[in-house]
Image (cartoon, one colour):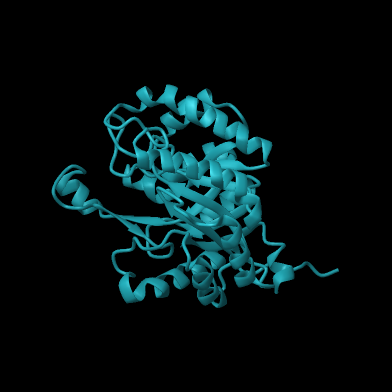
Length: 301
């Protein structure tokens, strides 16, 4: 099985929190058929020993053929409060140690100058991620920014500028190295009422990692209350339960030469949550595998 798994150009996996229980968590869910894992930290790595963690994770993966697709830290590395400085240090540590996990992608938010328009963050973005991207390039690592707005918009926000294609163009004009790109998912674009498929076709060359998260848009609510009213109109969903056709998404990724992982970002679905979390994730895993075309089958000789 692992031999055929290694021939999958696109793997299907899930996100796992980075902490002392990471390896144990992976060991428990690995039998469900996850093919890759993205290890993620929130704002800081703390006192985690990355060398020890990588060794424990390697033991948990065993001979399954599953891999660590990426490591990530989500915070605001552009600001200078103590926790922001820890986020920046986390980026540096993960870039330096991604190889321990067999990963070549470090992901996260760009950060932003809090309460400022996106364009005001661009000089600071270049100041921070110019050197980080070069540091990553020197180690064979790619940097990928998630496209989540985290409640912000063009004019203000606390976490991330990489949630709009206009911002992407500005970012990649500031830092032009080829190893800087996106950790893309359709959900965050759909929440902004952006059609993800034309965007995917335009930007696929800059997409290094994909989060498996979908969205349901309740258009009756949009038409009645608008997008700024008191009634929620968009819901983050596990793939298979939202509005996107992931057969189309994966076909577009394949046609454009994308290789890598689609890792499910769980813990957001309003229905498959709580005791149904892993039920929903495994359903999403199997759905995405079907959309991919199933398991790799070698051609007859």
